[in-house]
Length: 317
Image 1 (tube, one colour):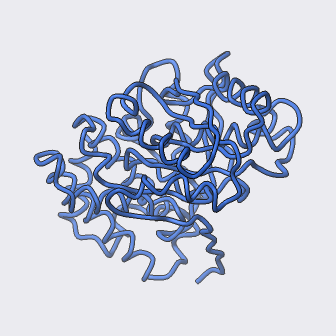
Image 2: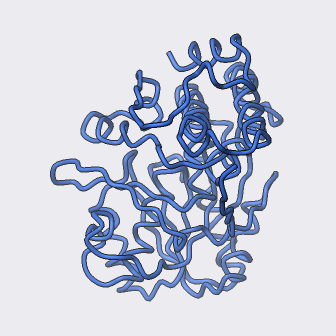
């Protein structure tokens, strides 16, 4: 087997009402003034945003709000966030949302901690030297960004999409309450489950993965079966806490390194989403062919049965 490194520094609080602890958690990690970063109106309509802000106030923390994050988060919103944080003296960024909001928060964190245009770091023109501290209140199980060291953003001009992976951007904490996913539309639930499955499969089908422990393969296989089983339940019973919990924790584990190396990823889907109003998870359902040397074929996924693989294929169609 190959040598490997596993690093997962984010503290996770999982369960009902954990978002009520967000103020105390921000304070624990040194926050004085917080940027509350979110997407559209769902966080407001559900009352989640009010609960988060109340928790911050109860902890004695000042905060400013910045919403408007869209799927395939835009560089312009990140730059707006950097300017706002500098003007307001913000020293902690709180993402309230899913992968797009978290990735946007990471981009703002990079912009605060590094000089010049933040896009230069995503273009690899400059090397990152730090990231402002980030916390997460997760509202959708999908991207796994709440416990990963990667982010993907889109430059408005030309709709260029770039990813950046460094250990600086790990969230200090992530609060995962499956109840917050009850009101997701069926499409987003299904797309999120597809994203989780792809993150797991892509780690298996790499050259490095052919040398990894059989234990890791079996973790990946169990996770895939778990998502397939509970996705069907969640779609029929949106308020089923057990199913939502299984999916949410699977999403986090699918992208924190526990299911294997990720040398080859879903970058082929990145350029199809921006400008086409397509979610990243939807693009991943399209047929993909990997030309990466040494990658495994589906037939080599020995820990899954042929029926399992057929179910994966049907779920992705």
